[in-house]
Structure formats: C-alpha cells, structure tokens
Amino acid sequence: MYYIDPHVHMVSRVTDDYERMARMGCVAVSEPAFWAGFDRSVEGFRDYFRQLTEFEPKRAGWSGIQHFTWICINAKEAENVSLAREVIQMIPEFLDRPGVLGIGEIGLNKNTRNEATIFQEQVDLAARTDELILIHTPHLQDKYKGTRMILDMLRRDSRIAPERVLIDHVEEHTVRLAKEAGHWCAMTLYPVTKCTPARAADIIEVYGDDRIMVNSAGDWGPSNPLAVPDFIQEMRRRGHSEARIRKIVYENPLEFFRQARNFQFTPPDTEPTESAVGV
Amino acid sequence: MTAQITPQPAADTLERTFLEIRAKLLELAADLDRIERGAGFEAVRDDERLQNIRKALQVLLEPGTDRAERVQMIFSDPYDPHWAD
Image (cartoon, rainbow over all chains, first blue to last red; front, side):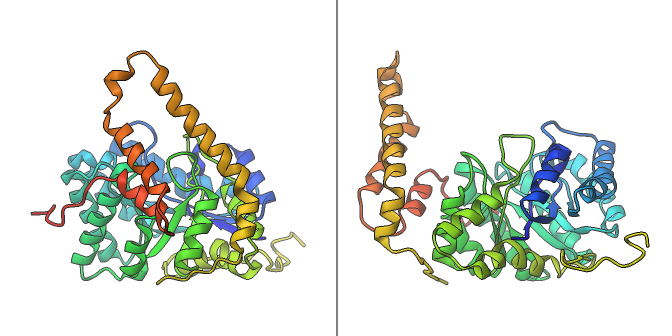
C-alpha cells in the first residue's frame, strides 16, 4: 500500500532509511523544522532551512520519494525570544520555495510565557502569509495543559481557519479537544513517550478516520521511520478495510496538504513523460 | 464525534492479546518489585510518580472504555483556563 509519512525529520536519518521507506510503500514525506539537539544561531537556522528546501528533496528523490517541508523556529528554541524574532523575520525568504507547506512545527514545549509569545507571533506570520500551520504539542505531563493553551490561542485569532491547522502528537486525552475545535490531527508512533500502533488504531476506532493521520516523527532520538507500515499492519490484523487504512495513511495527508499554496504532488501511478525517461 | 468502528469481536481481541497483556502485567509487577527491593525504597515510597502509578492501577480495575484517557489524565498537569491573564 502506498503511504505518506506526514511528519518525519529526515535530516536526522540516513539515506538507507529513505530506501527502506520507499520499499515499504512510502511515496512522500513532510518534514517539519525542529530542534537539532542543541540551540542554534540565526545563521544556523538559515543553513537548516536551506538543507530542508534544497538538499533534502534531492536526497528523498534518489529513492523516488517526494519531499515536502515546513519552516519555523521550534518551541524549545523559542524560549530565547530575541533569537526567535530574528528567525521569524527570515522565514518569509523560504515560504515560496517549492515543497514548503507552511509554518511548523510550532507549539509549546514547557508551556512557558515565552513559548506562548513566539507561538502567537508565528501564528500571526502564517495568517499574514496565508500558510498552513503544523503544531507540535508537548510531551508527557505537559501535553494536556499545553494542548489546551494552544487551542485557546488559536481560537482567539479569528484569522485562523481551523481546517488549515494540524495538531500533532495527539493522544487519548487530547484528540477529542483538537477534533472538536475543527482541526486536523496526527498521531505520532514513537517508542515509549508517544503512541503505539495499537493505541493509534484504538483512537481511530473510537474517534473515526476523518481529519486524522499517523506519522513516525522519526528523528535523531530512538524512533522508527517505518512506524507507519507497523500501523498499517495493526489495522489489517484487526480486520479494517484497505479503503479505511488508505484513507488514513495516504488520502488524509493529501487532503490536508492540498490546501497549501505550494503543494504539487505527483501520484505514484502517474505514467512518466517521454522527457522524464530520457527518450 | 464518537465513531466506534471496532471490526474485531471482543473474543477475538482477547484471544489475540491475552498473552501480550499477561506479559505486560508481569513486566509491570517485576518493575514494581525491583523498585521495592532496591536500597532506600523508604525514601521513594511516597514519591509522586509512584502515587500516580498506584492511581493508574486502580483505574485499570474499573469498568469502562475510556481507561487509557483516564490514565493519561492522572499523569497530566492541570490546565488553568485563566493562564493568559
């Protein structure tokens, strides 16, 4: 089955991972900007955004995978407000590049005032530039409170259409909040600290398959870039239809991404043109 | 909002997951044993994390279909609707 991994940090993965993902049916990835494990300078961010928009699409293409990306300063580095504002000023340089889907993954980490300030400034940027928004919700004990704070801030900005926002890393106690607010949701299949394929399938069974998707969030920590195929297998084991599984792992990400002004996707069964095959 | 699209009968789910559940319970029991026989256990007996684990175990004994959500809430910080004031 073809699938899309809508949240995976491929800059942290080796080329062999792209190849293994392609062999498992992955046809596209979307890569949000995130924390590199250390705090960076403004110029460090510029280099990172260039990597996301220039080299990474090329590397994905070697395995036949289409690469899309999101630009932002992440919540963790947003604690430094002056640095964050300099990065936000630079972001528009990258928004018209091919493959850029919007602003993300913005959000909260420790639910601090500085994080909330920079979150709202990036939401403002997305509203002014007509970009989609991808939102990181905090981990563990901070998640419920942080998700509520994020939803409060989105609700207070009347320019933000709920269906143009994806709330990521939802779990059993936050999925209802995000869906009832009209947003898209994503579940992250990540060892120990997030959701397992079985729990993600449970959430689908309880809350339905509309406006929801699953991702691996593969990154430089312990993570599994093949987690989406694990979810597909879990759904099949339970007797879910191929149509329902395809909706969650392929059609739903496409439906959300199609709202982005920069989104150009070539379906995997498209016949190559003569020029493309060098005839 | 609630979809309830569980295609697998309860008996099938039990059949497929019984050994996994048993293994998870044994793992948990062994984890708690390991903590309790460790040096200085008295100092952590009332640690908030252990208290929350005990509360979560109580939830598992109660009937319902929202136990995962209730366990999540035990391990969640409270939300203050006036946080922005």
